[in-house]
Length: 276
Image (tube, rainbow, N blue to C red; front, side):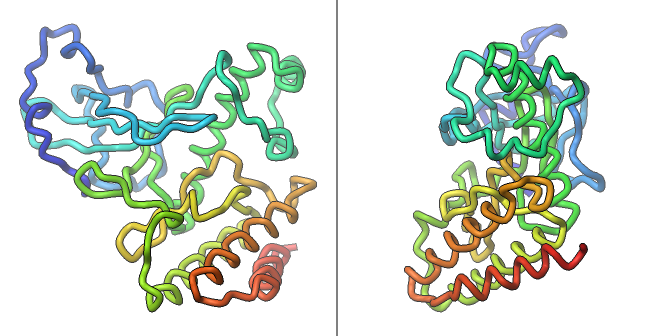
């Protein structure tokens, strides 16, 4: 699906039997947690595969996203993925995490205290929890058929996932895209269907905006899920849900396709509460 030429990498010989060339690493597939099955056929699972970092795709306060090329030397089998690497204790972490973390639990009271006090150990735990939460969320959402990147693997605070784009160029964020006005009704229906499916499973994105939706051709892809919110389990769940809905309704309206935020919110809330 995302096989790329990258001739300088495909033909790179291994330096010796013990290590790949400088700047590369052996695939971490064997030590990682894997995404849901059945996995797409473009996922490279061979233990002899090599990873090479192609550079930063996006920087953020909580994580940086890199392009990573994984290929099997001596073959044409390879894929470019997005590698999301969460920042650890020495960096600023999740300045708004308190509300999102409500309703989440860890097994040990010592860990909960460390996280609450934001000790160095606690910050490491938070980074791991956010990475794990996003990876688990993407797996569940993928299985529900939602338009999200496929989560390939999780290794500590590094998550590898499907790269949404073509030839190493990422699909634009909706905020910077310029969809034709006649395309807006279909894009809105895609969004509405995703919100209803998500709410029916008991969740909302928690930070949905045009900045974390990609426009891949004529398809919306929702990204950045570490803060996914359990609508019922989180005391602020319906507040987050309302914000997600009103933010996106306002964007479509501003582009010339009028969306009644109240009607959309009522539909989504009805879906969220239908399983009670």
